[in-house]
Image 1 (cartoon, each protein chain N blue to C red):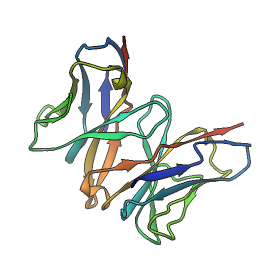
Image 2 (cartoon, rainbow over the protein chains, first blue to last red):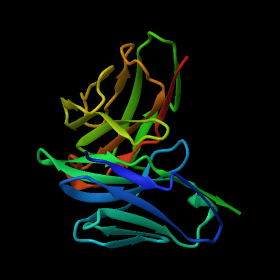
Image 3 (cartoon, rainbow over the protein chains, first blue to last red):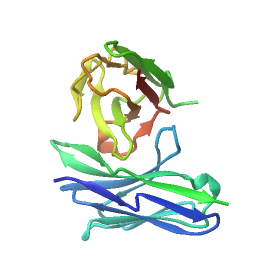
Image 4 (cartoon, rainbow over the protein chains, first blue to last red):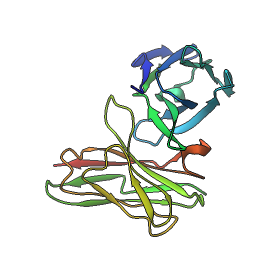
Length: 114
Length: 114
C-alpha cells in the first residue's frame, strides 16, 4: 500500500534550537519527494523537492535529506525561530499512468516557544 | 501579484444545501486541483483538471462537482450528497499535470456544516 508516515506527530522546541522531522514512505514507483510548510489556516508552501538522485537539499535554515534505499527522508531546521511554528508536510510523488500522483503525509505540527 | 485566490475564506452551510467554492489563478498554469484536508490526515485529491473543459475525478470525488470553463478558474461545488462536508478545502495549480513537481496552493476555504 502506498503510504507516507511522518513522525513525530507534534513537537515543541525552544527558540534557537535545532530539530529534525522524519518521513518514511512505502510509495512505489518513486518519482520525487517534497516538503511543505503550512501555517495554521493557510495553504501549504513548498520548501524543497528532491528526485531519486538527490540526497540533500537546502532552503535557508531548512535542509532535507533523502535515502531512497531505506525510503526515508528528514527535514532539519536549524536555529529555529518563532515563525517556524507550523505543520510540515511530507509528500511523495508516485508515477501512475504516465503522470505523478501525490501522496501526502499527515504532517508534523511544530511549535517553537520563546 | 501572481497567485491563487480562494473565496470565501470561511463558509457555513446548512444540511441539504449546495455551496460553491471559488478558485482563481493568474499564474497561467494549465493544471488545477482541489484537495480536502481533515485533522490528522493527509490531503486528499477531490478533482483535478489538466486543461480547459476537461477534468478528472480524484480519490474522493463523490458528493462534489467541478467545472473548468476558463483556464484561470476552477470552482468546486459541494453538493448535499456529500455526507461529511465539514473540512478545509485547498485549491492548487501547477504548470503541467503534477509531472512538473511544483504545486502552488491557495489560502484555503473552511466549510462548516451547521
